[in-house]
Image 1 (cartoon, helix red, strand yellow):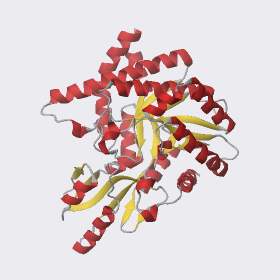
Image 2 (image 1 turned 180 degrees about the horizontal axis):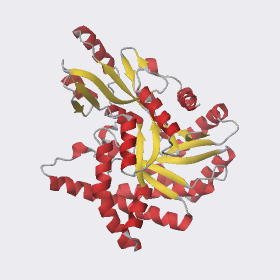
Image 3 (image 1 turned 30 degrees about the horizontal axis):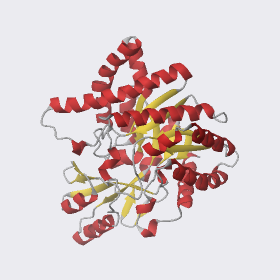
Image 4 (image 1 turned 90 degrees about the vertical axis):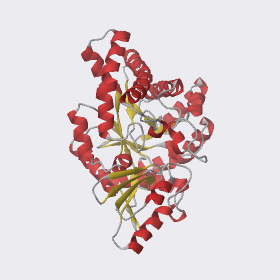
Length: 408
């Protein structure tokens, strides 16, 4: 949907089904009713997520044409895609494998390039909402616990290897723009325990690795000046601002966006999502009661990293809820956990959500727009505690309605 703050839709990683036929069936069952409810008289935007298998399926000309026709018939359009999870994302143990294969591999490169060609084809086919820009979010290079660095040289090798792979995609995006006039951007999505986790890490990687390596690569490939190469890198590699992820790391939206602006870096899209948080009371039994509330969200499918603020003001990081539950002690003041919870709920009894970060990001977008793409991304409906589960379409509708209310 086109809103005063940009294109808005929901990420279809919410739907199970890793083959295109299953995923398409889920879209057919969900989207027409959502559009009728939320955008009956205007085109409805979709943030499309395709696994590698579904991506390969959809490259078949007949399937792609069928999808294009369905989009036209239902007055819908694809304005962004999620290329982070490569494989299964539902009904399987995902955990750290959400990063696999990572950006050290040719598989990640080939998958991402296929996605971009599909996105370009879908953008070209869309006449109701002409787009000149579109993006795909992706993994923050890799998962940091897969690496054991003993010195800076080993760290450099990891960053150089992943960056070189990513630049193969950037070169393809330059060619697509030259041939078709569409500006496509790869949106890096920092997340807890990613190789890129914070705004500072993203900016450092961009300045110290992507720019110098990329300028040399693009100069060799296209014969451009250093300035032209740098401009292309800033256009085609951007940040995916996942609100949940930055909130878990206690990064304030104003601070993140100022750092991005100071470094002349772009935000490709906002992923609108909320995390769990709680401040621990002083009394012991009350602290244990809060901990018991967190235990209800300890499930085996996804990683739910925890960042702890302790009584000295330091941040302690745990790779998943079980480790944090075992490490809990009297020095812990506040917990924030990477569990995508419903946007429209800010109070879970003794726990709360980081909903305020969403309203802050949307306020900043209203005051000084920094992207054209907004995407609701809550994918955990199947693994929520039973008392929070509801019909999937109702949940999607309530989230989009809540965001529209904030926008208006």
